[in-house]
Image 1 (spheres, one colour):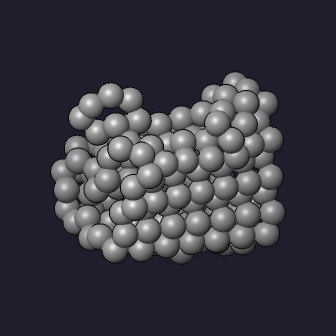
Image 2 (spheres, one colour):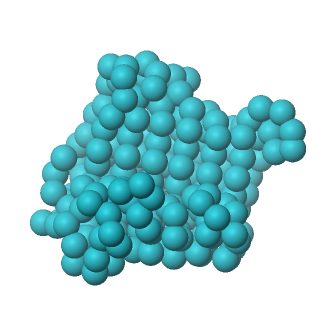
Length: 188
């Protein structure tokens, strides 16, 4: 099921993900898809993210509103040729998972550059929900690839959070430029 377009949908209060995909086998083999102009509200009560991709090569995730998830807004594993553009990630309702809260998690897959541009990451929560860390954007380097994080806004209104955290084991080229950071979500 390659080359699908999901546009103008409303994913609301699903116990699993609002949208889940993986590109190997059945039942939900999917790749090279567009997820555009959609609303994701309070999905993921059972531990999924609002958009949860097991292998996210070739995805374009653009102009979506994501809020109210107890787990997180976007998890993209095996990312390559992935574009995340112009989304609003409201991580205010995210909860502690093993000592850390992560709103958006991207794990590199080595199939081309990951571009994260023009997104709004914001937290309006007033406590860390028992967590010692709150991360707006978590990037993991599991393969040789490139990442560009440009023109995004990272804002926390009440609690200190980490805007961008990079981990992993391969030397990935990560370019960060033109991002804005609030005093409670400082420059990484």
